[in-house]
Image 1 (tube, helix red, strand yellow):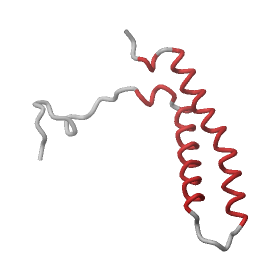
Image 2 (cartoon, rainbow, N blue to C red):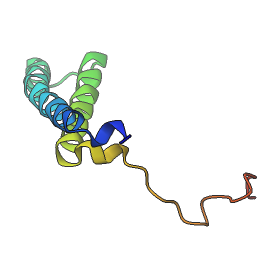
Image 3 (cartoon, helix red, strand yellow):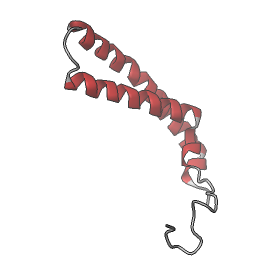
Image 4 (cartoon, rainbow, N blue to C red):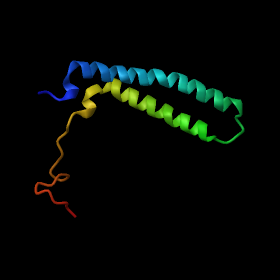
Length: 91
């Protein structure tokens, strides 16, 4: 059985989720702009900081899901340097 991320429904769903995250960044940016322009001389408020963090996460995750889609979950092979063959940690 193929991994879940290789199914066509997962590919479409992940890319749609990325599109929705990018679409949600637009109103988040508008709200952040309005909050900052209300009182530009004041310092950064906790609300502005959290909204900026949400905007960053929405835009970054949305772009990653649109560009990479299901390949974000594809396993990669590690080099011998970073994996131990006997199951013990290297020091």
